[in-house]
Image (cartoon, rainbow, N blue to C red; front, side, top):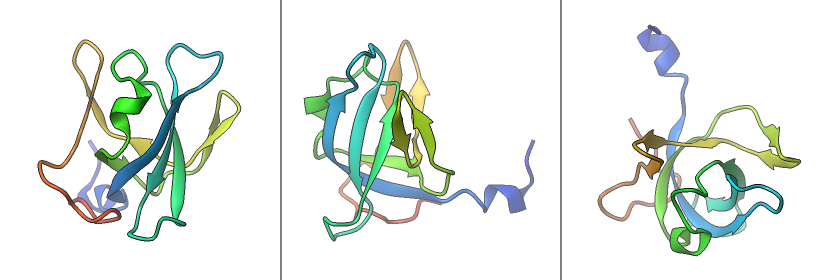
Length: 108
């Protein structure tokens, strides 16, 4: 278990998927370009192992929940600047708001 103080350190945000594409040479990874604000120039890249559950083109325009304050990590030679939240249920099921939310809105 983690303390409530530790949980408060996690920065969960709504992100809008602007671009999505399969990572060449990988049968699991999709590279996502995300917006965390209403300004399109403020984007972030996340690499996620969701290719078995989603086609990249079906993700564009979707809003998802991400962990925004993770240290960047290199995955398959690409920098990933956060982590999306998904449930595991015979594949990945993205966690999404049930109505449109301003990108960058905090979750909590």
